[in-house]
Length: 113
Image (cartoon, rainbow, N blue to C red; front, side, top):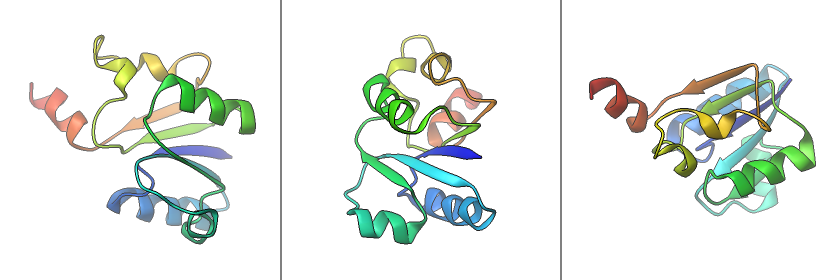
């Protein structure tokens, strides 16, 4: 299965990528932090996009590798396209996945608020 991890270069993201690739999954990542291709492969990522979790980067990922079966959103906040609505609009068509998992401080703030 192809999976996307936002924040894959972060503390939790790196551990999740390791577990997913160890289970035979193909993992693509989006988030902040410069990773050269060799570092991304060593981490277990097939693809790394250093940038915002936004429509342009997710469209590029989908165009290059197809739609994911699962998305793990571990980046520090909700995607920029979701901030106005507070919903997972950015992960609906054309990036619709079977499952979208949210985590991180953004999810905690929403839950507490």
